[in-house]
Length: 123
Image (cartoon, one colour):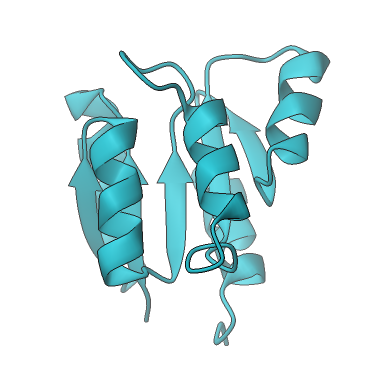
């Protein structure tokens, strides 16, 4: 299916998302900070990025803005997944360029449907 990069500093969340995505047939890679995530997106151009918001150093809002303003990475869809559940957070995430904003705990069917909608070659 697709190569998906997870940018999240929580080993538990990375494990949960990886298991879910691999079960759905995707190839998954992960990094635990935004700075490394930006470099990985630039070098590998994954089909989709799952981005946490709250991380040490650069946060997910800043990383999303960086990636969506970069001509090389601007077309890689970003799904923000976070515990931040305020409407202002969702609006801000989408304004930074995220294509979707999902709050934790994540509903498996919702996440997979969202990813399938955003992948260019989804069946």
